[in-house]
Length: 153
Image (tube, rainbow, N blue to C red; front, side, top):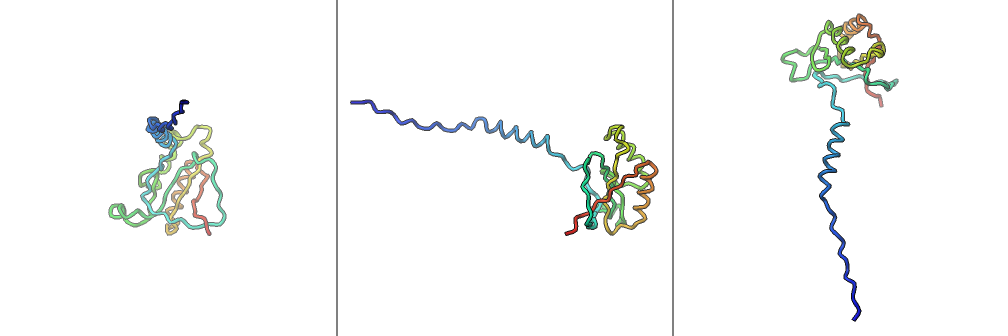
């Protein structure tokens, strides 16, 4: 009687390395993902525009938010438009110190002249507060100003 070959069962797929793979993916996304720079305390409903330019080097941007405080801060700050620098409310007089701190901590000395003030301004904000901010920016020789806007459909 001839020998019959036994049918080989396909081996089960081993899942021992799956936790390692998931852990490596988790670590990768944690390292690569950039968190938001600042929590926004003011409402900014920016105007729409047709002629927009995309900024190339976003490391040179210094965001200034101008708008009325969100509901949770309106009791303390009122509803008048306020300035936000990083994670704090500020006055126009705080801008020179803030710019110098940004130069020291975030930007290499050879790029100080290329810094850009990116202003995200609520369309209902009055021009007086914007003029004060621009005057303080001129005092510290930060002359490149970008106004952030939404894209018009």
